[in-house]
Image (cartoon, rainbow, N blue to C red; front, side):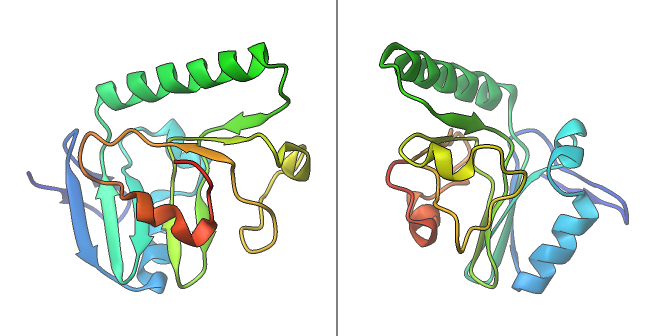
Length: 156
């Protein structure tokens, strides 16, 4: 599969995964080029991006990916509501530990630590707690559970 790269956008065919050697600075620059957070999510032609150990990964999700994560997140919400548990759940989110890791989980839940991030507009990954649960749908072999080790996420 081929990626089309222009100064303003990167288009990948659905389901494509591209692995590139790169530094944290390269990751940050590419993240900036793609547009950060919610602005990027509005333009679904932009790929998901991840940084780990000198490697930048780009992935274009398939519709199947979105459907499956939606169902799993909805089941988790129903179970938490049934148990009367307070929680914060959201997507999209970019988790970053500078120079070490950058990842975009499909969905995340704060259950035990919901109060620590309730009402926050930004999460400081070196200070605030990590999500208690991260949901990842891996159709394209883009995700490795070890990607979440630096964040100490208890359940992926």
